Length: 109
Image (cartoon, rainbow, N blue to C red; front, side):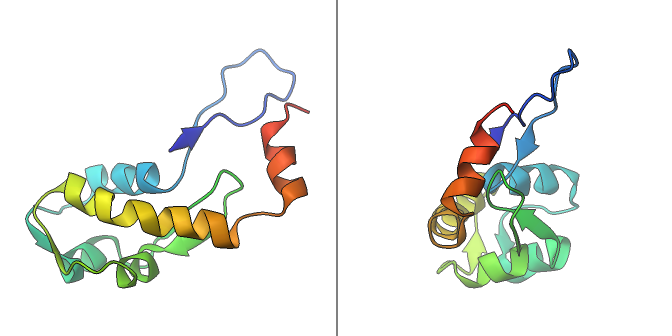
């Protein structure tokens, strides 16, 4: 997922903020990793790099997220992302920002 940050009143086009599996996908594109890959290989390639799981910038290490996946090997990048998706959704639901923090992130002021 990616969202645009609130506009600060300037006319420049803001960059998108990648979080969840979109952030993992961006890291995978830059990693030297071939599929099929084991969870250990993914962990070795991307390891303890923090991955934002919400638009507020809250992070979890990829190692921690991988530990919550039941699969030990992935046939494709898409399979890895599909397996990680519910993990990041759970992080957003259970550990997300407060209601005020969420509203502040959505409003353009």
